[in-house]
Amino acid sequence: MPLRLLKYGLSRDYPVTGDIPATPELKPSYDVVIVGGGGHGLACAHYLSKYHGIASIAVLEKGYLAGGNTARNTTTIRSNYITQEGVAFYKEGVSLFEALSQELDFNVMFSQRGQLTLAHTEATLRAFHLRAEMGKHMGTRTEVIDAKEIEKLVPELNMDRGGALEILGGLWHADGGTARHDAVAWGFAAQASRRGAEIHQRTEVQGFEVENGQVRAVVTNRGRVACGSVLIAAGGMNYDVAMMAGVELPIRCYPLQAMVTQPLKPWLHTLVSSVSLHTYLVQSSRGEIVIGGGSDPYQLYSTRSTLDMKEHLAEGAVHLFPFLQGVRLLRQWAGITDMTPDYSPIMGASPLANLWLDCGWGTWGFKATAVAGKRLAETIARGRVPDLLKPFALERFEKFRLLNEMGATAASH
Amino acid sequence: MKLLDCPMNGPRNIDEFQSFGPLRQGPDADAAADAEWARHLFRADNRKGVVVEWWRHVPSNFFFLAERDVVTNEIIRTYAPGSRP
Image 1: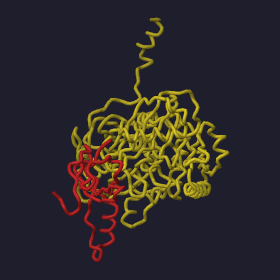
Image 2 (image 1 turned 90 degrees about the horizontal axis):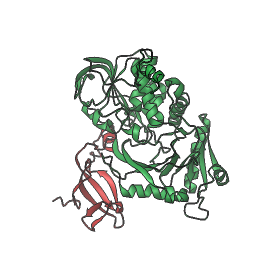
Image 3 (image 1 turned 180 degrees about the horizontal axis):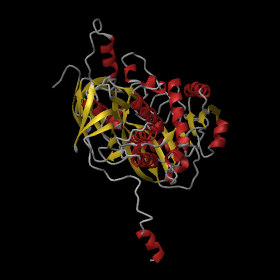
Image 4 (image 1 turned 180 degrees about the vertical axis):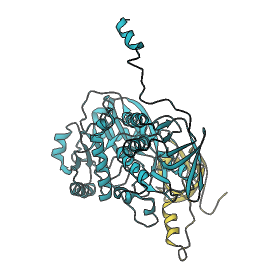
């Protein structure tokens, strides 16, 4: 071994540093306890510590860092929704991603390559026009394009002329993109822990001590911690965790299945999604084709995969790009999505004064990692919900003011 | 493919069936307050464990009940409405 290299290895001037410190001992109390060490919880810890001067934070994670839905989602970032409230919120989410590598001093591999959603029916096309107009009104880049433009954009697509699934047009969302999910979580975690936030892995929340409408303490498998405020950001386990505090959320859990192929040379330069086929594809920076969109048709708390769902995804993918027929699948998985009745998330206040919610992320959570973290940090630090989040309040269900978001993945169009 | 034992048609592939979610008692239509209706409509039972839920065999349009564990996905039993074993 060259001696010069060894010198660097042993030198005190170049200490070995990890991005994320090992799990420390639990302290008796924290200002903010965040339940869930996924992208959302870690993002909130970052924004709390960087912009609101709160460093006494514990992020409690049952498993390992970002190993739940952050690891399992298919990393689409977009804002082409249909409600004004939804587009306003996700637009801020996209703009935060645009600057996220700078914000975190960590390459999150954000690739704003545009997202194309295909219409095979007149009805879908009509819905696309509504979404495009809302998108333009709100200042995002969303437009309806015709079959000719689609052929130019993605020449590999099977247009199925005269067939049952002929591509009539599409919704082209130039702001859409993708990022590396692990990098997003690790970037937030590294920044937050540098400012004193503690990340406790393998720390399972087992209950809450509630007194006079407030959470006094969080009970975990490693002991009890008193808390100023609590945020629930536990992904597929949100319903369970909230129930421990006596809060019943309007959530049902369904598995969402996805898979990736073997790595290929770069050929798919946009994100492609088909409403009728319930299939979407994106080529990762490693060259794998990520294929997603298979929501199980009944409630289940399981991350098993099923052959019928993989078959369905493969069928959709091969229909759109017939030359994928000989390509091998490399991995398959599922995540538990916490679906709400209106396909919009639940953010903000709960019936308990110091318990805040970052729940109901269903199939639309990754793109909101930064914006939900930022705005909920603001909510917790100031004790009041910003205007951007108000439409997503839990109380909308009691008031019958649902936010029907039919631009969501897995919503029927 | 997973099989579901339909009380009328016998065991069939589960993709022939549609899930209609957990069985719930509807509120008293004349007496229920708004909050009760909201709860009935939106707060579906999502607890881990065995749930009783409505299913429909699509080709025959036959509705029935199934007891299923929503963690293991084990179907414990199925029966026609009103004939709980």
